[in-house]
Image 1 (cartoon, rainbow, N blue to C red):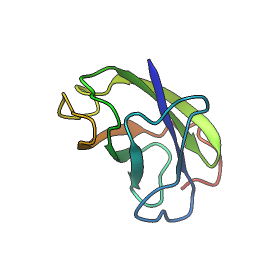
Image 2 (image 1 turned 90 degrees about the vertical axis):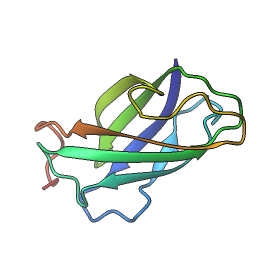
Image 3 (image 1 turned 180 degrees about the vertical axis):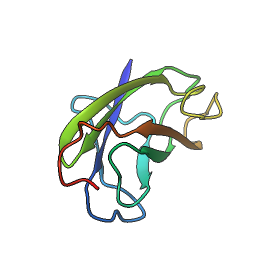
Length: 116
């Protein structure tokens, strides 16, 4: 399983590209280079939509990935999914090929205070 990236969402309005970080100890073989989160701002109890973009550094035909969702710096979920069928990436991909994918996730009501 690949631990791909963590998504950080704050209560203030988010820029077009949302700050994200790769989880420690992994190579960015999927070439994740941009993450966009909507709505702006994220709202507790509502869905957050995440669009991901990258350029693979290796041939890629599928696999499981994990995404940590953080709200105001607090981890509220760890999502595990199939990168092709559940993220919506059209697989297979050749090395150097661009890809996009996305997912929707409900922000739990137990998310930190200060999130509207």
